[in-house]
Length: 457
Image (tube, rainbow, N blue to C red; front, side, top):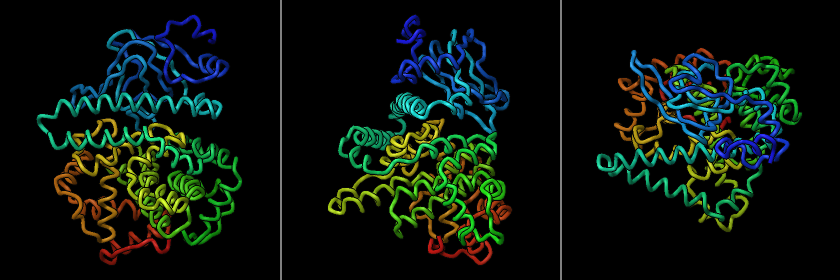
């Protein structure tokens, strides 16, 4: 044991640090500060900068938000929990406050320290955080379903069935063996994916990390100068590309490039990729329009939301003799399982665990902390269908209205939202979007709704 844990009570040994070797554990503790907050005092207030990951060593607290001069309790924390850098954060600022309900002791890990830890240390911490978050989320989720069982028996049964199915997949050695055959993302991809979520990220930071892999920058530059973007002048400098296209487009390109390196180059995969790129762009714009959620985070969720379907395509190409069995896999479950294997942050992986639920149950049945992200993804799919001129017969009207209501759009139809809100927003920055999305906008909004396919992607 290291010098800290040897002399500290067991309650101060946080589960997020389980599995770290002594030298790394000592390093983490030496770089962090212990903070003790008295009862009814605040760890952070609404409007404070989000600069630390907080590991709750002891005590309890509640997260509160003021709505029309009334305090609303958004959640609670207790020993062994954590408060992430992105929990109730917009534009780098906390949108809620955390009040101690009894003396609260936390280990405060600064963001810049976290980002500069050894890759294996960060991977271990993120893996542990995901387990903690999953356990806490599942516990609260199932408790809320149990409470409402008498009022919503069908919804409760659906949620319970999906929950049990997820547990079955996660305990299946056969599924895990199949996912082990999927190539891993390179370390820089995980690091960039986390950094690009922060609004304060500098162009220089992105450029320096991306340059760690020359093949990545070469691939990104090749795409930027291809007909995919249709730029009139050749771009020769990566930093210039970041400034020209913006963080969101560069983020999409980097994540896409990494995924392309792991998946088969087939028409079916390119179609999935086209779908994910469009959903990513629409999710980004919708988040900006409704002023809810993190646009950068939602852009990433959009790119990755269908990764499970890409996995099944890859597995089919690797094991054609198991084509039928692989076709029975639930992509909504194996997708988040793969992202977890890829050691992406829980802020990215956890919301996608509930994507299957959002297709079947109203938003009130979903965990509150993921409700906005899932509602944005839901609306992005409705808008995409509308832009393509495809009917929305598979989406019950009441369900669509409920999800739009979460985003403050309950009184708008999808068509009205696209024409009045989304279309103008996309048109303003159309020049920085891929040509295929520009064509989608032009065809849908200027020439009448037409069926737009991914042939040019």
